[in-house]
Image (tube, rainbow, N blue to C red):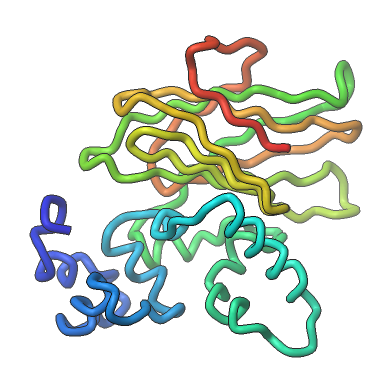
Length: 235
């Protein structure tokens, strides 16, 4: 907050233009843990700091797995759980949709479009294997985290929806992977590292994959990867 935005006044100035910024007392209480940020304001706060909203939170492997199970149980439940209400803002990131991620989320809260990359699995020559993709992104100026969201959709009209299945977060010294079934893992990364590798499953059916981030990156499918490059795998 201090180095990037110049303190609380800078946070207020950086607040997404479509929304009224919180007063300084409310902001002080949020930043000092005296009160929780209202769920409806999570995306606004992320926009002010230019963070992907997923990067605003910290968790442990066990806590993340418990949360994923709780969210899964809440699908179709008669009564909405408090957890579901607190995480309602997640819906547009994790729910299958023909438009994913929603373009207005990026423009409304971050003032720009999503960065999108695609790769495909034809299932013609090879099936049932992990495909490597190399992601390249320069470290951000203030060592802020960067997040990549992953989704796939099958070819044909049967189920033409993008289905998100996880995300990856790069922090100053690690790469963390979170699968929406509750699995998570981390690997060490050097602070100035620009590349890492992701492995994702290619099954028996053809599919298209989409990777979305709020910040610039490159992506190239590859058959080989330098063993010294950090690598994470979706189960």
